[in-house]
Length: 300
Ligand code: SF4
Ligand code: SF4
Image (cartoon, rainbow, N blue to C red; front, top):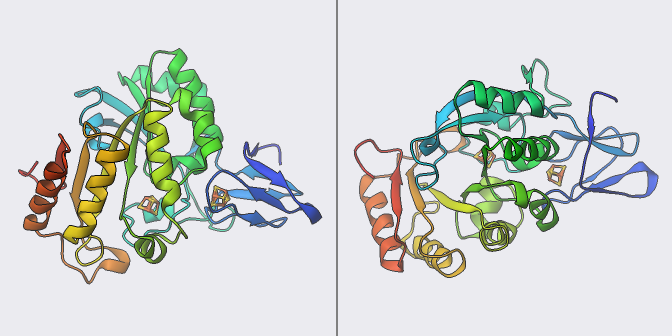
């Protein structure tokens, strides 16, 4: 019990059940069980994070890889991920860490990296900032929160690479300590988010993106992976671009990225270049100043 960190966002219910209020799943978790993300467990009526300070992956990356193209360009960022995710996307390139249940799955390898140590590592590697990425940082909340406070004190920048599925109180807690929000807007349809990402409703994603920018003045860049026949219609791309212009601002960079066939979508083709070029035109026509094509060497 002592090795786990008590969760920062939950309510106690009857019969030792708890309700997690960190993300809009609002999981009601019975004793011994974990929530949908697989990393928050009810132990004797207390909700704990099973992954505090447990990193599955650590690397020093160029900031442009996050992707953040208009935020400290040319800098290096210490990047860390853990296990689990509150979505279960059928195309997830990081499913080996993101689709794990930390309480149930055996043999998960990790390195213990305290918040103090991660700041020290950033300094030692010549990184200008720290990014929580690879799996979903929201569900690593307590650790990213403690680390972000120390990082800011040490003069480092802080980044979430996220799906944006977080409750407003949780975003407001970490908002003062996050500088950049590299966030996916995977679609503009609930049907897509339900079938492909396994969440009920994507409205909280829109709320988080707008709030990160307007309430917390984070630097926001938005990424959409274009999956042929799933989210790449001109009408849907226009909806996304129009929403960004209206709610986040026309200075917001939008990355339209090429999909590579994978997992549940192995049967599809990669995104044609023509679709990416069309998406870029749609974004520019909507008024966006910076639309970048991702995952295609030679196309930007
Ligand atoms: S963070 Fe995890 S346990 Fe909490 S509501 Fe979201 S999926 Fe459920
Ligand atoms: S939100 Fe990201 S990390 Fe989570 S399942 Fe989807 S693609 Fe993977």
